[in-house]
Structure formats: C-alpha cells, structure tokens
Amino acid sequence: MRKILAVDDDNDILDVIRIILEDEGYEVATLTNGKDIIDSITSIRPDLILLDVMLSGMDGREICKTIKADAHFNFIPIIMISASHNLQNYSALPGPPNGFIPKPFDIDKLVNVVNGHFAA
Image 1 (cartoon, rainbow, N blue to C red):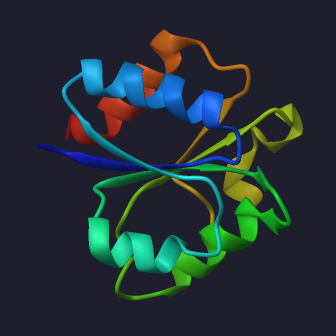
Image 2 (tube, helix red, strand yellow):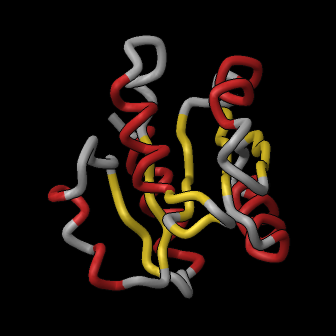
C-alpha cells in the first residue's frame, strides 16, 4: 500500500485529504507542522508528500527545499498545496516540488494528481 504524508496546519483540510485518499486505497499519515517533518519522513517512509505552503510559523517552500537537498529523501515526490495561486509556476521555486494543487482544491484534481504520480 502506498503511503502519503499530508502536512497542513488546518486539521479540517487534513481530515478531508485523509478521507479522500484512504478511499482511493492509500495509507495517509498527517502532520500539523513542519518542524518534525524529517523525523516523520524517517519513521513513516512516505511514497509521496502533500505539503501546504503556509504552515504556522514555517514556509512550506523552505521545507520542500530542505527535503529536496537531502540525498536520503530527495527522491520522494512533493506536491505543494496553497491558496496562493501565484505559486502555480512551482517549477520556479527553489528545490522545486513535483506538483501543485491550488486551494480550495477539487477532490477529483487531488485524486488525479496523486494517482498520476503512481501511474508510471
């Protein structure tokens, strides 16, 4: 079973993501902040990370950059989630993520983007 780590400081959004993706057959772990993300990645060993850009007191773009710079984790696809639609050109971000989903997200879009990363 594929594992997904969803990181967002909004528990309601995490619940929606978890329910939707568990219905699709994924195992979903959630995290409400970015400060413990490296420990969580080490223990959970996710196949994909869904990462909010604006976390309480932290910038998801910096967290993404840190993960992408770490040889132990840089192979894990990261999909950024944000209400800031000007981030849709995510390829210009430092340590670019592998995808972007705008908030509020469409359920089908979420499922399609996640499934698309495992289709290859």
